[in-house]
Length: 443
Ligand SMILES: NC(=O)c1ccc[n+]([C@@H]2O[C@H](COP(=O)([O-])OP(=O)(O)OC[C@H]3O[C@@H](n4cnc5c(N)ncnc54)[C@H](O)[C@@H]3O)[C@@H](O)[C@H]2O)c1
Ligand SMILES: O=c1ccn([C@@H]2O[C@H](COP(=O)(O)OP(=O)(O)O[C@H]3O[C@H](CO)[C@@H](O)[C@H](O)[C@H]3O)[C@@H](O)[C@H]2O)c(=O)[nH]1
Image 1 (cartoon, rainbow, N blue to C red):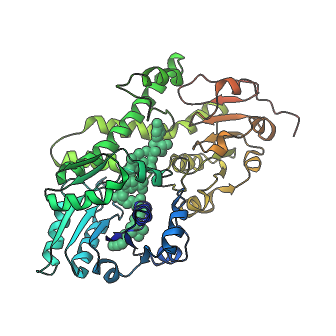
Image 2: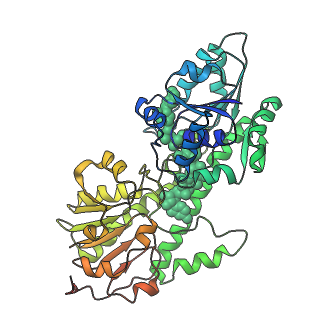
Image 3: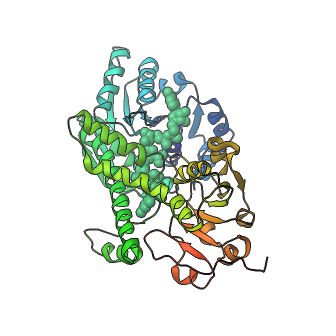
């Protein structure tokens, strides 16, 4: 099949390289010249395990192409996947300007009948709008069928998720279009759900809202654990064994971030509100999540008092491990609060520092050296559970920090191990370990 992907961000690029790997002719298009130039030279603009290998292989065998030219991108496509951003607007609704723009371009440049498949996360009713735009502006002799095909990949494991996902959703009332899209995915042997357009759009928001709800729920339980002296890890182990609950998405911490949950939960609240329903449960989920991100700073202040001129080490900047993405990362709100308190921040992240630099500039110091990050620090805050951070020898906190006080927003270390060290350790939903934090004489 001749496939074009409109938008070569996380979703577009991963979809593009994976569809090429399945043997299709794929053109990935974008409006950002630099991004396309980088891809044409064989480099991936995002850090995503597996992408660079697939990129190299499929470009080399002539199945994968990159362009900023819409005429070339849409002219000969049989299927066009829309994968442009749908970022949050001030009122929480999704910005559909990029999606509409693509719909206009498709109508303008299509030269044959086409199936337009929307992977971008869009509010219910958007695919009808896309269809309307294309039909209003396309050549009268050509046909375009719009299908909702929401994407469920996770950053950091996106390639694996493409090939081994839990389900594929195809939303359309046109059985011919559904069958063609189904053919694309059949080699993957993943359950395919065929449904109507609006239900497909809703499935995506409901899935993300439910997962966000699980996280905020467990974070509420963690708060109570702290107050009554229970341990959230014991509790999640205990409830997760119940098959009706399951063990997944019950990791307590400083909350969810990233480019999806924060925006999609807000967009669903708005969608409900616009349809005369107040989604109170989801509003509470969002509120709890905002509170979680502010915990490290309030916990730090409880232990050391004012943070003015205190040196704070921030371990982890990306919104989760195995990605360089810092969009809506908890680290960013922590840094904002720390700067307001007058703290001096040194941050470590294995991959995300250049993206963080673009957002934060030189308001903080960045280092690739964990020892340097910890040197003379008054407190260390863990914001992302990178393997590199989980593997830090616990002696480092004792050896290099002024006072070994660690606030662990992701419960990276076992309490048993921590108790072998002279570290004051405050995590989420687990008992505080208070050890003598007088500076060791050894460094
Ligand atoms: N990031 C994820 O993990 C993920 C997972 C599932 C679904 N989604 C959804 O998929 C969509 C894309 O997300 P993303 O994270 O890949 O976005 P992104 O911001 O990384 O990339 C979007 C790309 O679209 C490009 N673009 C904008 N207008 C364009 C146009 N007119 N023509 C061609 N390209 C254009 C931008 O330049 C950008 O490169 C969003 O709706 C998101 O909610 C994202
Ligand atoms: O038990 C958990 C699980 C996750 N998180 C946090 O939740 C956020 C999101 O994590 P994850 O879902 O793994 O990452 P995303 O790449 O944002 O993927 C989500 O958002 C995508 C975009 O819509 C969907 O496609 C995916 O199915 C959905 O998992 C991160 O900040 C995590 O730290 C927790 O705090 N506790």
